[in-house]
Image (spheres, rainbow over the protein chains, first blue to last red):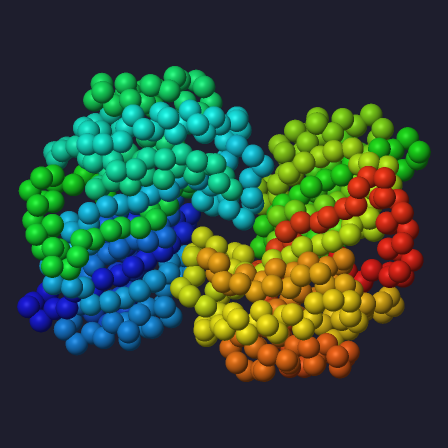
Length: 270
Length: 270
C-alpha cells in the first residue's frame, strides 16, 4: 500500500465450525482468506489484501465481536464496501460493521482487552447450540470452578497454560475469569491479551476441578510451576467464542500500539 | 400393543434444520422416524413403534420442549431406555427425559398449552444462530408489532391464519402473543393448541406491520374475515421453535383428553 491508503476497521462475527481458524493456511478454508478474498473481489484488487486481527482464533473457535483492520485504496467508501461485502460473504461470516479506522488504529496492537466466553453443559444439551457448547457427561461443581478461577486472575507468567511458541513473553494480565451457571455453565475470561491456547487450557484445568478430579487450588499451583502440565487438558475449540475486543479512546490509540509492542516484544496470540 | 404395555413420556429437543418435520414421510428423514427407529433398535422391537406427539412441527421447525408418548413392553425401564437411546440418537435430536407416563397421559390430547417462539433479527445476524433466526433486511417496529398482536389474543376462529385441512374446528384460544426486542426480535405465542401454519402466518402478518406495509389493526381485520388472506405471508420455518407443552395435574389428565377430543372433534395441528 502507498500513502494513498485508507485504513478500514472491520467488526466481524463468525461460526468457526467450518473454518480452519482465522489465519490463512494453504488449501484450507480460513476466515482471513474468506474475508480478504471477498474484499479483493468487491474492490477488484489484483490480490487479497493483508488483514490484521485482534484475536487469531484457532480452528473451530467462534467470534461474536472479532476486530480486524485492512488498508484499502483511498477512495473506498466504507458504507458501499459493507453493502457489497454482505452480498459476497458466506452465511457463516457476518460483517457487523465497516468503518474508517481512527488515526493510529491497529486492530492487534492497539487493543487493550480481549473477552472470551466458553460454554459447557452438564445437562441434556440444546441441539441448536451444539456448535458452540461443549457437552460434559459428568456433573460440574460451578462454585468450585469459580473459586479455582480466582487464583489465576492478575498479572502472571501464563507459560503453564500456553502452547509453546518461540520468542516473546507469556506474561499477561488476566482481568476476569468467572464461572457461573446460566442456561449452561459459562466461563468468561478477559485479559489484555491471551497466549495461544490459554483460555482453552485454563478451562480444561477448571473442568478438572469441576468434576472433583483435582482440588480447587490446583489450577493456581499449575500456574506457579510455569511449565506445561500434562494434567491440563486443552478444552475442545467449539465451546469458545471471542466475544469482544476493547480499544482505548481514539487519542490514545497510537501510544497504546507502541507500548504493547515494546512490552510484549512479540504477541504470541491474540 | 396389548394390555402388557407401558406408556412412556418422551421430552425431546431437536434442531429441525435437517429434518422434513416431525411426521413420518416415506423416503424423508423425519424426527418421528428417527426417534421411533432408535426405540425399535434399543428395545429390539420387530417394527418401529407409533409415537404420539404434542406438536407436529413442520420441516425446518425446531423444538426445545417437544413431548411425545410411546407404548412399549411392560418390562421397559425408562432410565435404561434413556441411556441407550442417547447412544443411538443423532446429534440433532436430544432426549431431555424419559419417564413412565402417569395414568391417562396422552401427549397430544391431554396437553393444555403449547408455547412457541419465533426469532427474527433486523440487525447483522449472529452466524451461530442463523439456524433458528430469520434475518429481516428492513427495520422492524416492535411496538407496532406488539400492539397488532394484542388484537389476536383470545378465543377466535383462526381460519384466516390456518392452512386449510378437511374437517375439524379452527377455533383456538390464544393465551399469549407478545413481541419484544431481546438479543433479537422475539415473538412468543401460547395457546391451547395451534392450527397448521398458524404461528408462522400470524408472524407473517406481524412482520408486515413491523415494516409498516400494513396498519396495526390489519392482523385483526384478517382474523375477522375468517378466510385465508393472500396478503398474509407464512414466515419461514427456521425461525420457529416449539418451546414447551403444558399438561394439567396428573389427576385431571384423562378428563382433559376426553374434553379436548370432544371440543375440537379433530385437532388439525399441534
